[in-house]
Length: 184
Image (cartoon, rainbow, N blue to C red; front, top):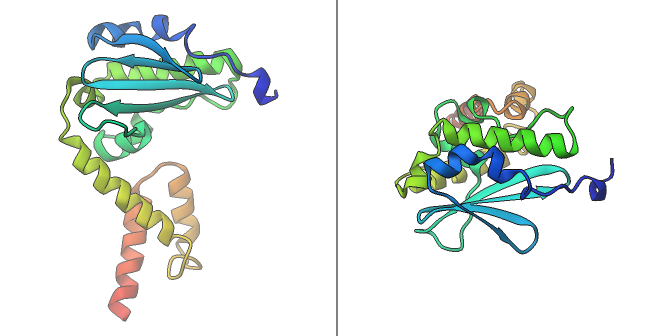
């Protein structure tokens, strides 16, 4: 299927699929230019859009105007179980309208699990941990492409763990970097 034929939009499905989250957090439904559907309250705005037949989800908080946050980074940094416990991507076997609906259901389940209570209720203490994690994730991810990680016997294992969103890859990279530093 070509990307231009897979654009279904979020707006027709979001109010019904996300109805419990909308009610629980008093979210107002809206739209922005570019086909972005918004669900927001006085603390947080969820930004949902259809990009090539898949839901792109970001969010912003009132205390940090102009900055959008990644729910994937939020889940990795803040939520117990991370992305593995709260998947946001539908199976690859789903396409088009069914994929959009499935991903909206996953977003609703994540919100309903209360893992997103902090941003939706105005608690901003998570932002410091988010930023620390984001920086460390980026640093360790970049280190994977250079010695001593590149060419290390654990390189493939680290890659496989990262692909599975198993965050123990970060511990492996830290261990290898520490071993290298102790040799210096």
